[in-house]
Length: 408
Image (cartoon, rainbow, N blue to C red):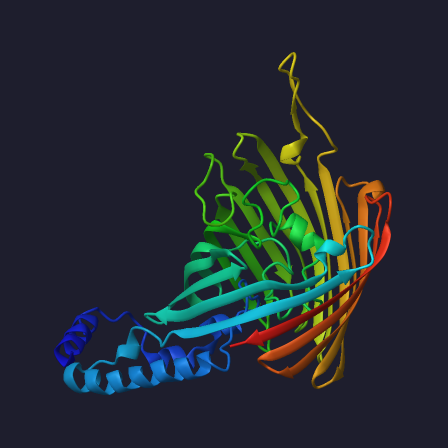
């Protein structure tokens, strides 16, 4: 076993060292790390109470390997690779509603369980893998590598969050209320309103992205953030279905630290299994401000492009046509109010119009106390008042949720 270990280290030491990739240099250049990006383009990951010990054991083992490698070969293992960081969490949910004939959805459910690992290679390349299970559905969420040597220009390739939507890339721990807004779920690709298969993919796609933060201010924040992503348009864990690619992007201005305003754009299409292709042309504007643990966030998004079900074929003539308006829009505003060190209360107004008209509007008014008893333990009781104009028999009803978050 010792011979195998020494041989593996010898192979690793044979890899040429790139400029400024030693662990010391990487540690000094804090601005190049993912955690210090002006805009977190992927969900924040942390270790839990179990993975903390696993990560410490791996880091300790690599330090011991460093001592042996430096003694025998004059180079450290950590000059090439960082200790991988593992993490995981689960979210459980209890829900009940006063809506007529909807009580079959009451009760306890598993919202999700996630496992992830992050790390760096040669100092400038960050990688990430994230898996998720929802009851019996086990699937890949993220896999990517990102060259991040310069904060002004980074390149990412793989499967990850689309460059569309301010709330979209947020971790469920950080959204505030117990679920994403209708805007995020319907118009960023979480469970897209076009209604085709493989559109419930958490706002992710496969492609390549360029992003960066420009013009540093005296207090350390940067005035401009940009992203440009070219992707398949078909969602996660599937190949492209046509020769066209989706383009998403954003420009964001941060005039003072913590205040962001900006816009997103998305142009592309989706091809369903029945061969129907629908366009997705969308824009989004937003504002966000965080100061002294107070939080404010608002977004508005508009979409043109039909649902897959809007495509009609006349059974007698064979003529094709599109039903519906081919439009949809949504908006929300939320505020987080710090109450105590362990309690923050969120208020949210959330609206979505399925065809861009008030007759299909669904509005949700929410209050959600977020109880952080520990960084690895959180509870979210939530009360929703819903006004849904799509429901003729019972348009006004209430919901109560209780979600439990445990990071392990």
